Structures are given as C-alpha cells and as structure tokens.
Length: 288
Image 1 (cartoon, rainbow, N blue to C red):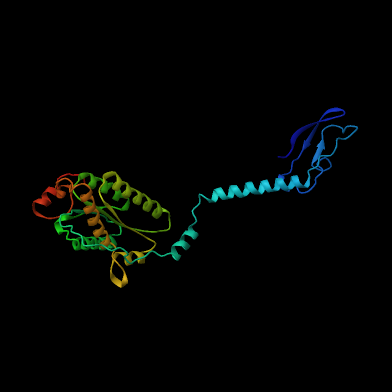
Image 2: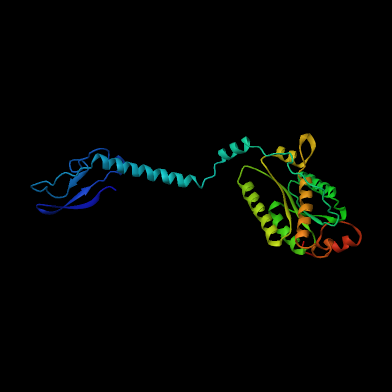
C-alpha cells in the first residue's frame, strides 16, 4: 500500500507522516525506513528524531518465503481446475485401447431369453456393424431371431432414458445399449461419455434389469473400425455384448427363481418389424 497514514509518539507529542510501504518480497536485507526517500513529514521534525525502524535480515527472508508460497498455492489451485489437453492426448497415444477380445464364454442356453437392443442413429455405419455383431453373438447362445428386438434413438445421450423405459416395461430379459462416440476438438466427448456411462449403470441398479454397456469411446475412426468389424485383424465387440446379455439374463433368472418379466407384446412398443398383425400393433402409441 502506498501513502498509508501512520502515527508515532515523539518527545513533542503526536506527529503525522506519510509512509510508502514496499511489497514484502522487495524488502531485502536491512532497510532504514526513516532515512529512505519514501518518507516525508507534514510537520517540522522533532528535536530528537525517533530511533530508525529496521527490518532484520531473517524477517525479510520470512516475508519473501510467505509471498512466494502464496503465489505458488494460488497457481496450483487454479491449474487444478484446468484440464490438460496436451497431457491427456499424450497419455492416450502411449496407452492404446485393446481391439481384441479378452472375454471367454461358456455354453449358454438363451433359447428363452428376450434381448432388447437400443442403438443410436449417430455414426450409423459403425453402429449397424455392432448391432450385426450383437445378433450374431446372441444367436450363438441359441437366442432366436423372434426374441431379438431393435429400437433406435438419436444419439448416445438418449440411451439411458430409453433403457430405463424398456426395463420398466418388463418386456425383455436383458438390454444392450449400442453406440459410438468419437473424440473431437471440444470437451463434448468427455461430457457425453461420462453421462452415458453413469446413466446406464444407474438403470442396471435401479431396475435390476441387465443393461450391457455397448458404447465404443474412441479417439478416431480407425479405432472404431477395429472394434466394430472383424476385417483387417479387428474384432466386432458386438459379439461379446450379445453373449454378455444372455449370460446376465440367465443369472438374473436364477437369482429371481425363474421369473423373467411380464408377457407384453414388444411390437406394441415399437420394437422390431415383424410384419402382419405385429406391424399394425406397432402403429399404436406406446412408450416409444
């Protein structure tokens, strides 16, 4: 602070001085404040000048340390809330995601299991490949074509809400949420990925219906291709998701004593396109 008012008691009584106080980190060594050019008296000096005010060496060092510590703490707390894009990208490059499958499945009998697939229209080509893989994996577990139902939603953000509606209807034994998220130049990817992941887990726990996380989160389209197709050494993860849905549906059946849900018509909710009477029923308003 510059020009701060101060009062002292001298032999002639009270006198008033204007003092310019330097910042603490500039107070190096011993400084005679009264003899410095930064002090001017408004009145005549007393007969006996007061003893000079001195700042000791160790006091100056302590004040410098405190000032530097405050600056360091302020900078550290500020940077804690700023994402480091460069560090994040370097981390992803050094640790690529695995494209091959590391999950094995035993012989599963899903002949009575009903699987609902919720898929996004966003990134349609890749999602369609994943849905084909889901169907192939489920059929390997003896799930019939008639018991596999597909419903579209606009994007990945809508998957948890649609999954909860389907789970609450009691018309399927397991649900697979299928979508593709590719990182762009903004933080949209991170926000959507986190929200979808939490939402799908919440549906699992809130409805006690198995909801498989079938959303690819990739840094570029090349990573997506290796995880949505068996071509060029890749692996379609949809196959694993289909088998996972069957396994979890059977686990739920065993835990609940064989109860597998309500006997509603999925066509009435708009799932699948079987033609005939089912197609007419699908035209009626339902959850979707």
